[in-house]
Length: 114
Length: 111
Image (cartoon, rainbow over all chains, first blue to last red; front, side):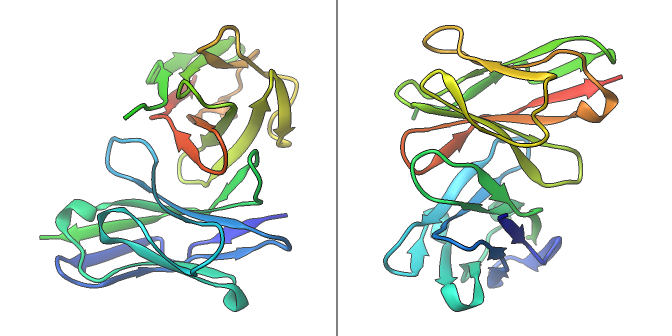
Protein backbone atom coordinates (compact mmCIF):
# COMPACT_ATOMS: atom_id res chain seq x y z
CA UNK A 1 0.00 0.00 0.00
CA UNK A 2 1.08 3.53 -0.69
CA UNK A 3 1.92 5.89 2.15
CA UNK A 4 3.19 9.44 2.36
CA UNK A 5 4.97 11.13 5.25
CA UNK A 6 5.31 14.84 5.76
CA UNK A 7 7.52 15.31 8.75
CA UNK A 8 6.90 18.98 9.40
CA UNK A 9 3.50 19.68 10.89
CA UNK A 10 3.88 23.45 11.20
CA UNK A 11 6.65 25.61 9.79
CA UNK A 12 6.99 29.28 10.69
CA UNK A 13 9.23 31.52 8.61
CA UNK A 14 9.87 35.17 8.06
CA UNK A 15 9.45 36.71 4.64
CA UNK A 16 12.44 36.16 2.34
CA UNK A 17 13.52 33.03 4.20
CA UNK A 18 14.11 29.88 2.19
CA UNK A 19 11.68 27.00 2.44
CA UNK A 20 12.07 23.27 2.24
CA UNK A 21 9.21 20.95 3.14
CA UNK A 22 9.94 17.27 3.37
CA UNK A 23 7.93 14.50 1.75
CA UNK A 24 8.75 10.80 1.75
CA UNK A 25 6.65 8.09 0.23
CA UNK A 26 6.57 4.35 0.12
CA UNK A 27 5.32 2.49 -2.91
CA UNK A 28 6.73 -0.41 -4.84
CA UNK A 29 5.95 0.68 -8.37
CA UNK A 30 6.05 3.69 -10.63
CA UNK A 31 4.66 6.76 -8.95
CA UNK A 32 3.39 10.14 -9.91
CA UNK A 33 4.14 12.79 -7.32
CA UNK A 34 2.25 15.95 -6.53
CA UNK A 35 2.27 18.93 -4.26
CA UNK A 36 -1.04 20.63 -3.62
CA UNK A 37 -1.57 23.88 -1.73
CA UNK A 38 -4.62 25.01 0.19
CA UNK A 39 -4.75 28.72 0.93
CA UNK A 40 -6.98 29.79 3.82
CA UNK A 41 -10.62 29.33 2.86
CA UNK A 42 -9.82 27.98 -0.57
CA UNK A 43 -9.71 24.57 -2.21
CA UNK A 44 -6.76 22.32 -2.95
CA UNK A 45 -4.78 23.67 -5.88
CA UNK A 46 -2.08 21.88 -7.83
CA UNK A 47 1.32 23.42 -7.19
CA UNK A 48 3.46 21.06 -9.24
CA UNK A 49 3.75 17.46 -10.35
CA UNK A 50 6.34 14.90 -11.36
CA UNK A 51 5.71 11.99 -13.69
CA UNK A 52 9.03 11.27 -15.34
CA UNK A 53 12.10 12.94 -16.83
CA UNK A 54 13.98 15.74 -15.12
CA UNK A 55 13.70 15.09 -11.40
CA UNK A 56 13.71 18.81 -10.67
CA UNK A 57 10.27 20.16 -11.45
CA UNK A 58 9.15 23.73 -11.35
CA UNK A 59 5.67 24.77 -10.40
CA UNK A 60 3.66 27.90 -9.97
CA UNK A 61 4.62 30.86 -7.78
CA UNK A 62 8.34 30.08 -7.74
CA UNK A 63 8.03 26.65 -6.11
CA UNK A 64 10.08 23.67 -7.17
CA UNK A 65 10.49 20.09 -6.03
CA UNK A 66 13.14 17.46 -6.48
CA UNK A 67 12.41 13.78 -6.88
CA UNK A 68 15.17 11.64 -5.38
CA UNK A 69 14.29 8.06 -6.18
CA UNK A 70 16.93 6.51 -3.94
CA UNK A 71 15.53 8.38 -0.95
CA UNK A 72 11.85 8.03 -1.90
CA UNK A 73 11.60 11.76 -1.42
CA UNK A 74 9.94 14.66 -3.17
CA UNK A 75 10.79 17.76 -1.16
CA UNK A 76 9.25 21.11 -1.93
CA UNK A 77 11.44 24.22 -2.04
CA UNK A 78 11.20 27.92 -2.54
CA UNK A 79 14.22 30.22 -2.27
CA UNK A 80 12.37 33.20 -0.80
CA UNK A 81 8.90 32.95 0.72
CA UNK A 82 6.31 35.68 0.84
CA UNK A 83 3.51 36.37 3.31
CA UNK A 84 1.07 35.22 0.62
CA UNK A 85 2.61 31.73 0.74
CA UNK A 86 0.92 31.16 4.09
CA UNK A 87 -1.10 28.01 3.44
CA UNK A 88 -1.24 24.29 4.02
CA UNK A 89 0.88 22.16 1.71
CA UNK A 90 0.06 18.57 0.87
CA UNK A 91 2.31 16.02 -0.76
CA UNK A 92 0.49 13.25 -2.67
CA UNK A 93 1.37 10.09 -4.52
CA UNK A 94 -0.51 8.44 -7.33
CA UNK A 95 0.18 5.04 -8.76
CA UNK A 96 0.27 6.22 -12.35
CA UNK A 97 -1.98 5.82 -15.33
CA UNK A 98 -5.03 7.84 -16.08
CA UNK A 99 -7.35 6.75 -13.30
CA UNK A 100 -5.86 6.24 -9.89
CA UNK A 101 -6.29 7.24 -6.30
CA UNK A 102 -4.10 9.80 -4.62
CA UNK A 103 -2.55 9.08 -1.26
CA UNK A 104 -1.92 12.23 0.72
CA UNK A 105 0.42 13.19 3.50
CA UNK A 106 -0.97 14.88 6.60
CA UNK A 107 -0.03 18.29 5.32
CA UNK A 108 2.34 21.00 6.51
CA UNK A 109 0.99 24.32 7.65
CA UNK A 110 3.30 27.12 6.56
CA UNK A 111 3.02 30.46 8.32
CA UNK A 112 5.04 33.30 6.86
CA UNK A 113 5.38 36.34 9.07
CA UNK A 114 5.77 39.72 7.38
CA UNK B 1 -10.30 28.79 -15.96
CA UNK B 2 -12.83 25.99 -15.37
CA UNK B 3 -13.16 24.74 -11.81
CA UNK B 4 -14.79 21.91 -9.93
CA UNK B 5 -17.71 23.19 -7.88
CA UNK B 6 -19.44 21.60 -4.90
CA UNK B 7 -22.69 22.23 -3.08
CA UNK B 8 -23.54 22.82 -0.37
CA UNK B 9 -20.46 24.32 1.23
CA UNK B 10 -21.70 23.20 4.66
CA UNK B 11 -24.27 20.57 5.52
CA UNK B 12 -25.53 19.86 9.01
CA UNK B 13 -27.56 16.71 9.55
CA UNK B 14 -28.83 14.45 12.29
CA UNK B 15 -27.35 11.01 12.81
CA UNK B 16 -29.20 8.42 10.75
CA UNK B 17 -30.31 10.88 8.08
CA UNK B 18 -29.42 10.59 4.42
CA UNK B 19 -27.29 13.26 2.79
CA UNK B 20 -26.39 13.91 -0.82
CA UNK B 21 -23.31 15.92 -1.63
CA UNK B 22 -23.15 17.39 -5.09
CA UNK B 23 -20.28 18.11 -7.40
CA UNK B 24 -20.01 19.58 -10.87
CA UNK B 25 -16.75 18.36 -12.39
CA UNK B 26 -14.85 20.20 -15.09
CA UNK B 27 -16.88 19.66 -18.23
CA UNK B 28 -14.52 17.64 -20.43
CA UNK B 29 -13.16 15.44 -17.65
CA UNK B 30 -13.85 11.71 -17.67
CA UNK B 31 -12.59 10.58 -14.26
CA UNK B 32 -14.28 11.54 -11.02
CA UNK B 33 -13.32 11.08 -7.41
CA UNK B 34 -14.45 11.63 -3.86
CA UNK B 35 -12.06 12.16 -0.96
CA UNK B 36 -12.68 13.12 2.64
CA UNK B 37 -10.69 14.77 5.38
CA UNK B 38 -11.65 14.28 8.99
CA UNK B 39 -10.53 17.22 11.09
CA UNK B 40 -6.85 16.93 11.89
CA UNK B 41 -6.33 13.90 9.70
CA UNK B 42 -5.13 13.15 6.19
CA UNK B 43 -7.14 13.58 3.02
CA UNK B 44 -8.37 10.04 2.28
CA UNK B 45 -9.49 8.50 -0.97
CA UNK B 46 -13.06 7.21 -1.01
CA UNK B 47 -13.95 6.26 -4.57
CA UNK B 48 -13.11 6.75 -8.22
CA UNK B 49 -15.65 6.67 -11.05
CA UNK B 50 -15.20 6.26 -14.77
CA UNK B 51 -17.48 5.34 -17.65
CA UNK B 52 -20.50 5.32 -15.36
CA UNK B 53 -19.14 2.83 -12.91
CA UNK B 54 -16.94 2.66 -9.84
CA UNK B 55 -13.30 2.00 -10.75
CA UNK B 56 -11.92 1.67 -7.27
CA UNK B 57 -13.16 2.20 -3.74
CA UNK B 58 -11.52 2.27 -0.36
CA UNK B 59 -12.51 0.26 2.67
CA UNK B 60 -14.16 3.42 4.01
CA UNK B 61 -16.62 3.32 1.12
CA UNK B 62 -19.00 0.73 2.54
CA UNK B 63 -22.64 -0.01 1.74
CA UNK B 64 -23.72 3.26 3.31
CA UNK B 65 -22.03 5.18 0.52
CA UNK B 66 -22.98 5.41 -3.12
CA UNK B 67 -22.05 7.59 -6.08
CA UNK B 68 -23.98 8.54 -9.13
CA UNK B 69 -23.65 10.63 -12.23
CA UNK B 70 -27.33 11.34 -12.78
CA UNK B 71 -26.83 13.56 -15.80
CA UNK B 72 -24.04 14.90 -17.95
CA UNK B 73 -22.81 17.41 -15.41
CA UNK B 74 -23.38 16.34 -11.82
CA UNK B 75 -21.54 13.77 -9.71
CA UNK B 76 -23.07 12.95 -6.35
CA UNK B 77 -22.05 11.19 -3.17
CA UNK B 78 -24.85 9.79 -1.06
CA UNK B 79 -24.53 8.65 2.53
CA UNK B 80 -27.63 6.66 3.40
CA UNK B 81 -27.59 6.74 7.18
CA UNK B 82 -25.05 9.16 8.55
CA UNK B 83 -22.96 8.43 11.61
CA UNK B 84 -21.13 10.83 13.87
CA UNK B 85 -17.82 9.66 12.42
CA UNK B 86 -18.90 10.73 8.94
CA UNK B 87 -18.34 14.33 9.99
CA UNK B 88 -15.60 15.53 7.69
CA UNK B 89 -14.74 17.71 4.74
CA UNK B 90 -15.67 15.94 1.50
CA UNK B 91 -13.76 16.84 -1.63
CA UNK B 92 -14.77 16.04 -5.17
CA UNK B 93 -12.09 15.88 -7.86
CA UNK B 94 -12.08 15.35 -11.59
CA UNK B 95 -9.40 14.70 -14.17
CA UNK B 96 -8.81 13.69 -17.74
CA UNK B 97 -5.48 11.95 -17.71
CA UNK B 98 -2.96 12.09 -14.95
CA UNK B 99 -3.87 15.10 -12.83
CA UNK B 100 -6.82 15.59 -10.49
CA UNK B 101 -8.43 18.95 -9.87
CA UNK B 102 -10.25 19.47 -6.61
CA UNK B 103 -13.39 21.30 -5.64
CA UNK B 104 -13.68 23.54 -2.58
CA UNK B 105 -15.24 20.82 -0.44
CA UNK B 106 -18.42 20.30 1.54
CA UNK B 107 -18.14 20.36 5.29
CA UNK B 108 -20.48 17.71 6.66
CA UNK B 109 -21.41 17.92 10.32
CA UNK B 110 -23.37 15.02 11.78
CA UNK B 111 -25.05 15.74 15.11
